[in-house]
Picture 1 (cartoon, helix red, strand yellow):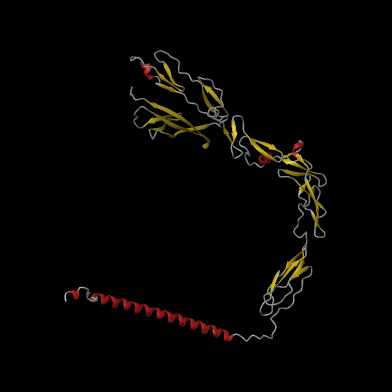
Picture 2 (cartoon, one colour):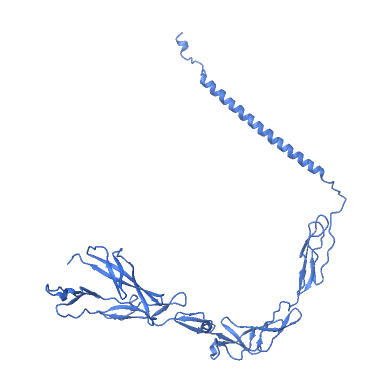
Amino acid sequence: EKRGLEGFRPPCILTCMDKHQVVGVLRQMEKFLKGQEMRFNEGLRIMKSKLAALQNSVSKLPQADQSSAPTTCPSLEAPAHGTKFGSKYFVGHEVHFTCSPGYSLVGSATRVCRENGTWTGADVTCKDVSECASNPCQNGGTCVEGVNQYKCTCLQNWSGSHCQHQTQTAPPEWSVMNDPAFSRRPRCAQVNQAQHCSCDAGFHMSGTSDNSICQDVNECEVYRLDQGGKLCVHECVNVPGSYHCACPSGYKLLPDGRSCEDVDECLSQQHNCSRGTTCINMGGGFQCVNPECPHSHGDISYVKTSAFQCERNPCPMDSRSCHLAPKTVSFHYLSLPSNLKTPATLRFGIVGGNSRSIFVMQRSDRQTGELILVQQLRGPQEISVDVDMSEYSDRTFQAKHVARVHILVSPYNF
């Protein structure tokens, strides 16, 4: 009996929880199928409604009479002095119109045949165009009509196809007349049995229509006469058909073609300063300098510590005059333009360097300014102060100059 039960397995029995889960799934499936059925029925209903509406609209259309001819529009003729394009007059077809040279189209250039047997647009006519209607002759000239052309009869002292050129009895101030390099023959062409001449840019027509010549326009003089200020900052040079700006020696022309910039010969090594001297750039050139310390007198003497600085030698303890003498003497070079308007006002201020608000500028009187130390310094260090000098004339700003002052701070306080 025991051996008979060895291969026996009890049947799988669902728990109460398993039954509830299966019932829940079946209910969800039932809801899902009901929703699908409702959406399907709704779509079917909408399709039936649209089909019924379509059948209703088709039934209202008039019965096509296969034996009747298609709708046409009345025939159209080409206007006088014009041409018609298109020979079919069925619904939807187009007819186009153009006019012969010398005539302008009035009406609709394109007309379309409509379903009711009428044409769109308005009737077309070709109107004669007068060549003289636009008054092409200038300066009192009379316009004479021709075949598809016109001719201007000019008053005395005027020439050209439109009487646009004045016959010069005396050359204008801005014209170059006495140099063959500044004169050219005009370009002429025969157009509709009339000769038309023109000049290149930078030249103007001079002389009569039978004997005309192109003379150079002096742009530098035109600009001056128009009181437009300076065309060039330094010098304007007139050339045949144009002009260019030039700078004085020691300056170079900037990319704007009219302004000049000083060439720094010291920075570009274009100087000839000998050893022992220092190159100082100035407007339009340079100078080779070797500043000397003040001459010794009494107990006061100086020694040169750099190319631009001298320091006072130690003073005797009992020498008051030596202690009152400058401890250091430095040399600075400031380049100013010539012919400054007077009186001129110079204003100084700190504009840069690495001083970090260590100094401030203060005006002590009308002719004196002070550089005031407002923060304690610890050495050794080197401080640079960019001192700005602004130049004014009649309270109007003229120019700005900047000088860099180098200050060497000693690690000692004596």
